Amino acid sequence: MFRDRDEAANRLAERLKAYRGKNPLILAIPRGAVPMGKIIAETLGGELDVVLVRKLRAPHQPELALGSVNEGGWTYLADFAQLYGGSADYLEAEKRTQMETIRQRRAQYTPIRPSISPAGRIVIVIDDGLATGATMISALHGLRAMKPAKLICAIPVSPPDTLAKVADLADEVVCLEAPAFFQAVGQFYQHFPQVDDDEVIALLRKA
View 1 (tube, rainbow, N blue to C red):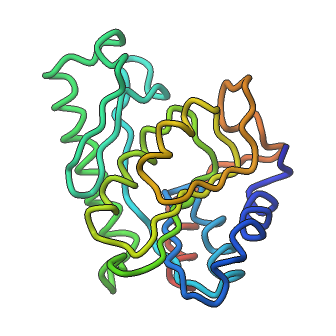
View 2 (cartoon, rainbow, N blue to C red):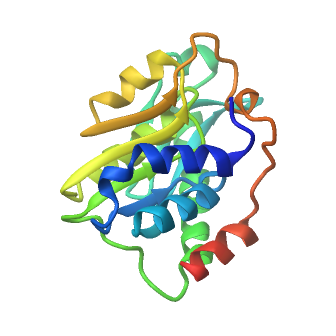
């Protein structure tokens, strides 16, 4: 469906053009969404920053999200977490591990300035796609508590049931494609390379 993240970002920016000139705050979920966030922020005349969340990984299946945690420590758990080994002790240890990663990334990504406050702002949260939606759920929950003027979730692709989960957490959801057959976000991109920390840091410095 998408050649690469740049194409997805440009298509999202077109759908979000109503916010051009309103100084929206574009918050990208690292790492893959940060290059997309830069394109969208430049197109809309907004500011770019990151929202830090981490998935809680299943034992022996690190790609499977049993839930997620945001920078404030709020935790979302999927209803199937226990079925895949998500005991209370395991999840508490995994939460501590991911919170430490969040602290390290904040120190890496914005060492010379604090994160930009979303209070009173039009906030657009960007990811390169949703699968279970776990990290987006934690991101939106944490941001809502900071009282943005409007909270928007914008993604290129998501399964329909995941869209339903995030719809109640945002004032608006913009999704370009919602295919019924969904295995992984990467299947909808022809070119889907990993984005590393150095690229994220460089993009935030330019922003």
